[in-house]
Length: 127
Image (cartoon, rainbow, N blue to C red):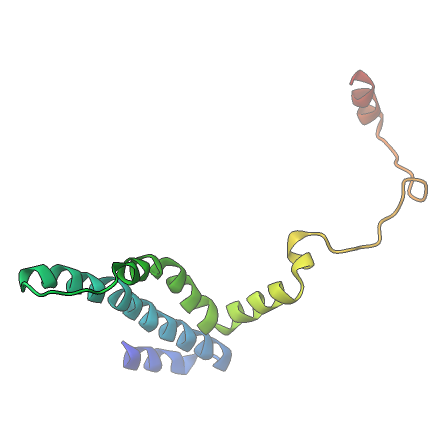
């Protein structure tokens, strides 16, 4: 898949090639992360009773490894792709811009008179 992708990316711009390479790296890590967080701990849990082994491993770590997969999957994409990483950095640097509480100069009603259309004035009069 990597070699076919490199052949296809020879015809596109450098920025697009870099973005596709970042997506490819994140895809590889997103495929690998369930193996580390789901399958290896599950195999360990399921094979110990069959082999009659005495294993005193804290099960809280195994349960945590199951529950860490969803945020880990999102974090992989957000940290590898540069555009997403820059957007997150901008959110943390200027959170007011995200939540709409940025201070912008507003005009008062006295400085900007409101002109109503005749129908709008009638509709307002009914309420």
